[in-house]
Length: 164
Length: 164
Image (tube, rainbow over all chains, first blue to last red; front, side, top):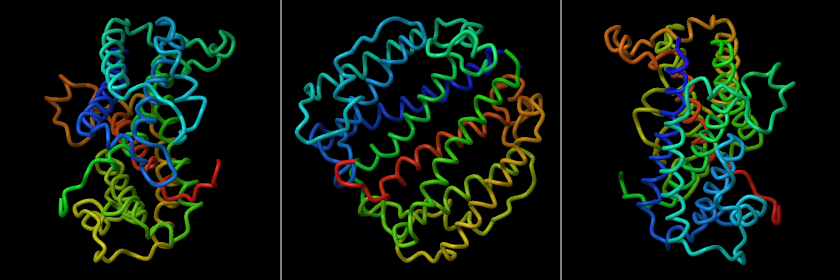
């Protein structure tokens, strides 16, 4: 088994899950994104901002640079959704999502296989020596299941064709 | 990077996502599982049966044996949810879920690292030679994102504490 294969397995999952969310956001209007998934829970637009904020934090964790959208951490990560929260315009969030997924795709493609298995920045060298699974590729893996979890919620905002 | 580390990365994700669902099913009453996640969509009990059916199909795919619950394929995999569908009693489905996750955990622990990277049964030897990522471990990875997707829906049935 080569490292290339392992990296491909996990990046394929990441890319497929991002594509699923791309399609969902494209099919949802701004008005649909304003709705709560179920009464009292997160709105679609909160989840859009939340996913950008969580993926933005992958940059420093993976030593790929500083956060590009630090202003999204407070409203979309530190705070829960609230109907009184003031968010950036939805069209701006949509553009950030597109820019970010394209940027991450490009960055991920240039990472050499052996570099994927280096430690990420929130684990110490001592701990990493004992726990080599706490590597950069594992960051992508954990964010992929996080993304799938919220994709399962966003799909509920899509209008269902009766009988389909 | 050793194969052990990669296997651990993916099994850790599987086990954590199963644990999340275990906790969700334990916190949901039979009455709550009878509810649709949102009007017109799957009920909790359908998702419970669906997850058992999908995970049951991992056995033949990974050469671990025949399906244990073939009777669940038609109602929970081949067919969408329907309010007129007749399902096994929820307490039986809960027990199947418990038995299955314990059984899979035990089976997965006995698979040797190198065997995880052998081909699964729905890929030909010719294709596998060109696409070595289509291995048994990849089955667990794809089922993990599938499970996370539905976990994101099941959590919506849990009663939310106001203000929490």
